[in-house]
Each structure stands twice: as structure tokens, then as C-alpha cells.
Length: 308
Length: 236
Image 1 (cartoon, helix red, strand yellow):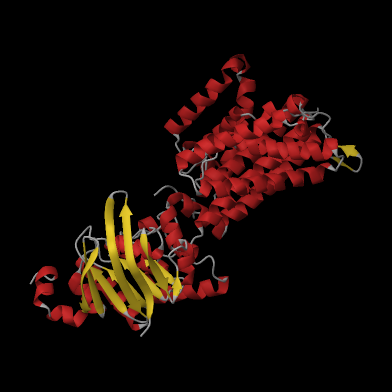
Image 2 (cartoon, chains in turn blue, cyan):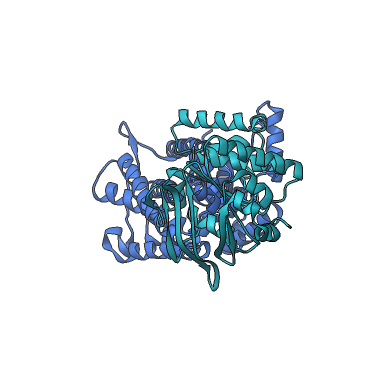
């Protein structure tokens, strides 16, 4: 029996937003750089790939790669800006960035203005368009690659240095960590994840318009990150799952969706401040116990740093 | 002998509070110098200005003949200035070894390995605790880690801010033995200390800071023979 298309759609969306939330975790959870405009980076990725493929007829693979690069570059610029800003101003600046990006999409015809861009092609392999399950697998395949990249970063000196910048920026700089470079890297890498997620969503829906990337979407992505745990890789995906699936489950509550994000954040912050899969969280301990039962216990060493 | 470090006319203020009012301090190659004085005299600010955490309003910091006043702290660290901050500030949720690795990530991996081996040879206890999280260390061990981290980049000059602060007397002895050994190995040292007697034992010269000014400077021997100094700083 084939899986209903509805579930495939949900699973694809979970993958796409999982990538976006994972990127936010890198910028915000690891390096401690506030980013309240992640949807802006999704927009940059989506528009880049849409223009290259729908308007210029380039292959989708190239479009997604260009989307990653475009978001990476804009993210690096945002990182350079962040160096000069205190945390609270950075929060406001990233919100402003989100509004600015949406404004540009709405007012310039290259981005389709208020009509958006339609007929965005699906990727195809050997003449077969990837739809339904195959597009879902593509999304989850890319998610898997990006999880591997995140793990690599987490375990390298870069992951350590990100933690230090978050924990104690002054001390980090005084013992030789190039704090500026780390901030630029953290923003660039996190934005790149956002750009890939944006491009995947564009090719999934076939149609995008400026309002797909407005500020509330940044809050939705932030909700995913906080729910799962800002410093947890698996948490980003779990958070995405909860936020994507819960409105479907609670469809009668649809009009209260945004209120629900708020309630979810408050509940999680209250009962599991480090997120469901954050350190010492109930869900994480349960999961570890289950994994231990299957002989899959993670190695004892825990390296994620916390505010000290 | 030409100075390795020369701080000239440093003026620093935090808003309206003036911390340094024109301070000149120098350290020659291989020399060990201590800075003593009351709380709030500007000692910590002086070190922070030299490593670059605080920007002076006036004055300059010259290291090995190069004006580094405008450089960020990490560039200074890479040029050869090691910094051991006050209060045993280690990164609590990193392991002992990770604390060392992050300070040396810009080094070639092979060199970094040798450097880590070297600091383990100085502090064998850190080797035993290499995979423990730093917050589990005792006060003395954390201070050793903080010093070890300051040595990872093979600094030419080591800045130490009150390494004996808040430690049990027996640990203080150990810390100063370590400092004496570093001086013997040829590290240049600028040491800020409240424990004046101990500081003088390991340094050749001493500056006294008071309200942001250098009010006294002498060789350690002179200072020990100076009744006024002894009266004020060694309790007679």
C-alpha cells in the first residue's frame, strides 16, 4: 500500500525545516549569535534557485548550489555586521534584515514582485522528475549530508571555538581565538543551511512569493530550534517535526497557530530550558535510556558547552 | 637591554571612572617583573590593555619593536603574548585537553601536540585529568590549567593576573614554584600579585600602582631593602 501523499508532504516539510532549524542552531545555539531573521536566508536561497532554474533554465542542482552560496555570502556579511553590535541590537538588526529582504522581493520584478515566481521546476534524474517520495528522499538525503557536516564542525576546533565565543567572548579572544572570524563563520554556515532549505522549498512547491519568507516564519524556525534544544543536532529535526506536524494534528486550532508557537516556547523554556533534546532534558534522558537498551548508548564524553 | 614589551603613557577609563592615568611599564627579554598595589589600583586593567581587551584613550603598547595598540587580542596572542586571567577562568564545560586545544588551534597539529605534551610535563596532574570537564577541577588544578593554556602558544611574554588569588596556602606555594620554574626556563613575565612577598621572590623588578599611576619602581632587592616600601606593602 503506498503511503498517502499527505504524509510524504509532511515528511518533506519536516526535512526542509529541519535543515533551516539546524542552521539556526549552528549560528545561535553553538556560537551564541542571535539570528531572528533565518527566513530571510531561506528567501535568498529560494529566490536564487528559482530565478536560475525557472527564468534562466539552469539545472536544479546548480540552482540549489548557487542558493547555498548566495546565502553563505549574505550570511558572512551579516556576520561582519554582527561584530560591531551588542546582542540586543543584533536581534533587532536581524529582524530588520528579514523585513528588508522581503521588501526587496516584493518591490523588484526580478523576484516576481507581488506575483512571485511560478513554474519552478522539479529536479530530475535521468529524465525522471523527482516528485512525492523521491523528492522526500532527496530532501532527507541533503539533510543527512548537512547533519554530517554539522557533526564534523561540532567535533572540530571550529565547534569548540564557537562554544567559547558564546560562553566567554573576551576570554576566548585573549587566549588566541579569532572571535571576529568565528562570528562571520557561524553566521555564514547557518545562513547557508537556510539557503539550501529555501531552495528545497521552492522546488517542492513550484511557486514562491515574497510573503513566504516573512518574519513570522523566522519565529516558526526559532520555535523549532528552541523546542528541540538550541545546541542539539537531533533536536533541530525533532523541533521541525513538532512544529510542522502539530498544526495538522490540531487543525481545529489553526487560527491560533501563532499563539501556539508562543505557548510551546513558554512551556519548553519552563520545563526543559535546554530544549527537548538539550542536555539533561527529560526527552533526551528517555531517548538515551532507550538507545542504551539497544546497545546504542552514546559514548560517555559530553562536550557541548553551556553558559558558564 | 632592549625592552621586549613597552607600555607608554597608557590612559584608560571606563566611562567616567579613570583606571590608568598615564602608565609606563616595560619588560626586557627574559625578565620577570611584578606589579603590585591595592585593589582598584589599575593592575588588572593594565594587563587587559596589554593583551588588548581594553583600548587605551592614549598611549601605546609596543611589543618587540612593533606598535600593537590597534591589534585585536588574538593577534597579540599569536605574536607571543600569553595571558593568564584572574580568577582561574577556564572554560568549564570543555575537557582539560580541549581547553588547551582551543588556545592552540591556529598551530600546526603536530606542533600543537608537542606543546600539549610540554605543558603536561610541567603539570603532570593535568595529564591525569585530560578528559575531565574543567569545572570538576580543584581550585589549584584550574589555576594550573589556566597557566598551561597561557603557555600553549609558546609565548615570549606571559601576563599573569593574581595567580595566587583565593588559593589555599599550600597551593599558593605550588603556583609560585611553577612561576619560578617558568622564569628559569627563560619566559619573560609580567606578574600582577597581591601577595607582594611571594611576587618579589620570583621577579627581578617591581612596579607599585596606585590610583592608576606608577608611584614606585625598583629592583626587587632594592624594594626589600626600602623601609617605606616594606612598611606599606610587606606589613613592616
